[in-house]
Length: 459
Ligand SMILES: NC(=O)c1ccc[n+]([C@@H]2O[C@H](COP(=O)([O-])OP(=O)(O)OC[C@H]3O[C@@H](n4cnc5c(N)ncnc54)[C@H](O)[C@@H]3O)[C@@H](O)[C@H]2O)c1
Image 1 (tube, rainbow, N blue to C red):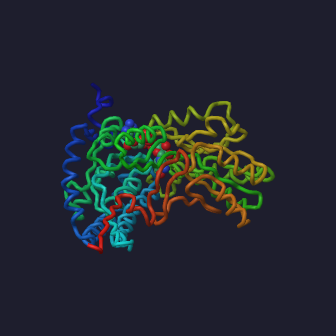
Image 2 (image 1 turned 120 degrees about the vertical axis):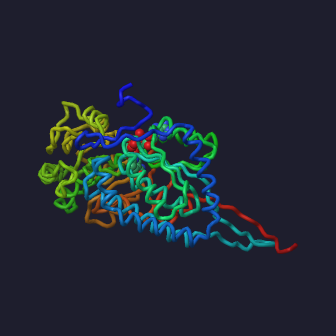
Image 3 (image 1 turned 45 degrees about the vertical axis):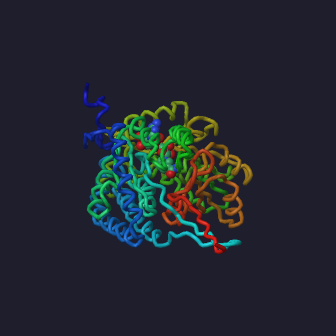
């Protein structure tokens, strides 16, 4: 069997050069069984440890990550093709999440509720062993979104990174040990989704699955989890609107619009890929956005000036190409020829909102520009999607900003900005963009089960 087809190993390619970075053994179902047994034993000791000790070790983990930001960032550039600036932010996000979760340990406590004849005491018990199944688009932060609060709440974690991006996850597991996280409490099992991922989903020893990835796989996982009433958090796809009203600061809105969907080469669940512009300013906006888009610097992710790198893989490049059919009218930037999985920044104009490129998640550097008439029409178009993850609106009218934000069915909206994710604020989707919330002050509680003990005072 050729190495490229050997399912026992994962081949990690540098998306910017197509060079082989590493081959990594893929975990089998037996490996998952063994990992769950080890994690179950490790979790007992961790759950019994004093919360202050858990917090201290997590802070040390954060400090060790902090000492390796540059190394982790450069590894992320090699396996995922992210720009160096983005990758540094991502490694820093892991550190911040660990720190934030450590603070959460100290605030995690139950309640005492006086009731007739006694008192109810509630405990927040850890769930056990958590399976985190991560995508390739933000390998480090998304792994840490599950890892940090799950460990903080007293659980063990088995992380299955995406096939294309296992290296940063494996390095994080080494750094965890260096920081004093007990052996087997945090394990990384690289592998194929249909084998390693599925084995975690089906395993009776896994208490909860935290899945981030496509809506298609998320639905399969949710239905498998239902068989055991297994807890599940789903962070899925998006097709987020960027609504520009005529009264907005058009220069600012047009300057920000390209990177609002080109960041991470459009491989971002929050990418604002449907740019909805009020018809009276549509032509003016197109004039302003065109130079902003064509001047985006695409190329070597290690060059500090680069704003957009390659797509993750040949398969992803094919997917993007298939959406942008020859009949579509588009404004295009430039991209290197190859080697590497390059696609230029692309903004499609004059397209029907129901066309596949306008309605489906492309997950590449492609957006559509669509006109709307008035506020009601903007909200209708924004909500005409099965997704509901993020969105932006640009206006100088505060009342409109609040009205439209309340009317758009999405979990994370921003006004005169494209900011989506802040680790101290809950994040998650409406509709088919997900189930449950991650991050924010309640992140730890999502990894606990509430137990109520009634103590009679009448005995
Ligand atoms: N909502 C969010 O927070 C968020 C964040 C990032 C990415 N995403 C979404 O992720 C998608 C891109 O990631 P992807 O292509 O890696 O998604 P994917 O669904 O193909 O894979 C995600 C993970 O699931 C695993 N997997 C695949 N099949 C499986 C199965 N049958 N059982 C168990 N695990 C399985 C994969 O190996 C990978 O680790 C996009 O749709 C994007 O919008 C969502």
